[in-house]
Structures are given as structure tokens and as C-alpha cells.
Length: 274
Ligand SMILES: NC(=O)c1ccc[n+]([C@@H]2O[C@H](COP(=O)([O-])OP(=O)(O)OC[C@H]3O[C@@H](n4cnc5c(N)ncnc54)[C@H](OP(=O)(O)O)[C@@H]3O)[C@@H](O)[C@H]2O)c1
Image (cartoon, rainbow, N blue to C red):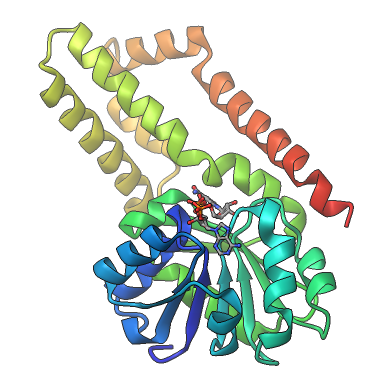
């Protein structure tokens, strides 16, 4: 994959995060990546930070690419697809991160049986820790899915799902960093409330979230088993748990994910109607 030519169309938050992941993990040589954007300031930034090539023309960027990453807002994707349609290589992988924008719509607008893979990453791609779900379009083969997987593994972990589940993915992990930011902020506030200095409270909250996540990940144990490890009879944890259950923390989180999933479906509605 090192010399695969990749065009990133839209070098904003997500496009730049993906470029950073690809370059810093050394998965792809910076000279093999071309970022295209209408915003010249964004282009200068990615050029300066990651030494990739930059262009203001999407068509020119797409013409040279084995992989075209579409990371513009979904509302302007119809227009961008119309622009690049004629310049795409026949077997190019079209990799879209546009939320709610179906593979069938990309296939319809590009014609010629394009190899489309759709992804829902999250903003933690910026630190190489994204959770990404992939699904493939009608004409993408295992080869393209494998290449898409490698690209997203350069900035986190990857699962494959059916396209019908992409709104659920958006509700859980696409939106997910926000839930955790709020939880960290709330834990930091709680630390201050019980007498800790703000800086120390935030540091402890962040490390606690990192450590707990790593424990679930590295031990492979069910979180409930790990919870049992720290709840000793009559201790602090079981008393805190009782308080959390009374205030319905689980229901709050489940409700938030369900609401975000519903909103993702609503936002995708115009694109699903073709
Ligand atoms: N951010 C996330 O957490 C996240 C998570 C999952 C998926 N996504 C998806 O990623 C995509 C990009 O989101 P984002 O948050 O990165 O948005 P963003 O920061 O606004 O980036 C989009 C970039 O595209 C540029 N642009 C606008 N029109 C263009 C055109 N015709 N051709 C080329 N570039 C153009 C924008 O320039 P201007 O700023 O001048 O308009 C901007 O630099 C979206 O489809 C979103 O659904 C984002």
C-alpha cells in the first residue's frame, strides 16, 4: 500500500485526520497522497504538517488516484461526484466517509460500476485511535474492502457491518467521542467538587477512562466481570454504583445513542430518496 496513490477530497477535520494517520503510521508515503480542497488555508496546513501534495482541483486530484477518499460534507457530495466522474481510473477505490450518504447514490451518480466502500470513522482518527465501521457497495470486491481496511487501520480499529447498520454506528461510535468528552468533563467537575485541584482532577479522569478502556480491550473480559473486581462488599464502588443506577446513567447513555441514530437516519433521508 506504501505507494498507492491516494486523493483526499476535502481536507477538513476528518480528511486531515486521515492524512495524519496515513502519514504518521508510515502506511503511505506522503508523496503518494494528494489533498484537494476549495479552502486554500486548509491545504497549506496539511502541506506544511504532512508534506503531502495539494491541489485546488478535485478533478485533477482524482485523475491520478488509485483511491479517492471523499471527505466533504454530504450536502455537496452530489456536486463533487459530478465533477470527478469522468476523471476516475476504472478500478479506483471510492472511499466515502460522508455521514448518511448511501453507496447506491455514489454508484448511481458515478455510473460504470464503481468500487465503492463507505466508512464511518470518528474524530479520534486525529490521534490514531478512531473506531471505524466499513460497508461495501454493490461492485466493491474483497480486494477493495481489504485496502479500505488497511487505510482505516492506520488510524485506529475497524469493523465491517451491513450498510443498514451505518446509522447505528453513527449513533454509537461516530458520535461517541462526544459522550466520552462529557463523561471526562463531568468526572473532572466531580473531582473538583470533592476538593481536588482542576488540573489534577482532569488528569486523573482522563487516565481513568484510558485505563478502564485498555483493561476491557487488553483482557478481553466482559466489563461486568471487571466491575465485579472493583466492587468490594460495603465499599466505595458498590455505593457509587447504587447512586449511578438510581439516577439512570445506563438509560441516559442508551437514550443518547438511540437519539443520535435516529437523527443520523433523518439527516440521510434526502440522499436515500435518490
Ligand atoms: N468530523 C467528524 O467527526 C466526522 C466523523 C465521521 C464522518 N465525518 C464525515 O466527514 C466528512 C467531512 O466532515 P468534516 O467534519 O471533516 O468537515 P469539514 O471540516 O468542513 O471539512 C470539509 C472540507 O471540504 C472543503 N470543501 C467544501 N467544498 C468543497 C469542494 N467542492 N471540493 C473540495 N473541498 C470542499 C471544506 O472547505 P470550507 O471549510 O471552505 O467549506 C472543508 O475544508 C463529512 O461528510 C462528515 O459526514 C466527519
